[in-house]
Length: 86
Image 1 (spheres, helix red, strand yellow):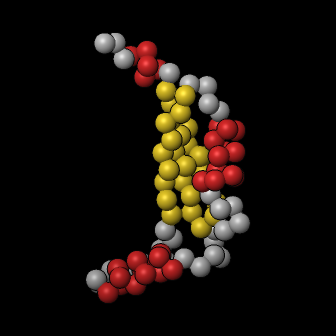
Image 2 (cartoon, one colour):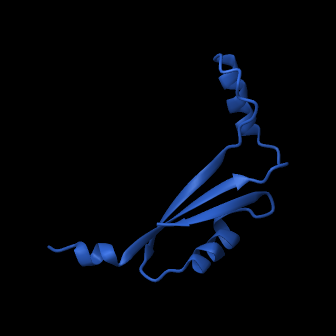
């Protein structure tokens, strides 16, 4: 079975979601504290985020992915996001 045509019809988007600066990040602070306890004293701050990878149909635009972020993937009140079309 020739899947090369099927692969051409798919694309990916990677969405990086992070808490906005100024928003308390308790998980990041816990990681920073744990690293310090392990002897990694040079870490002054940690911000934790998430990466969401989407398999998209051919022709899906970055504008569509942005709409997904605004409506579901990111809480835009406290999070920022960056879209990477692959």
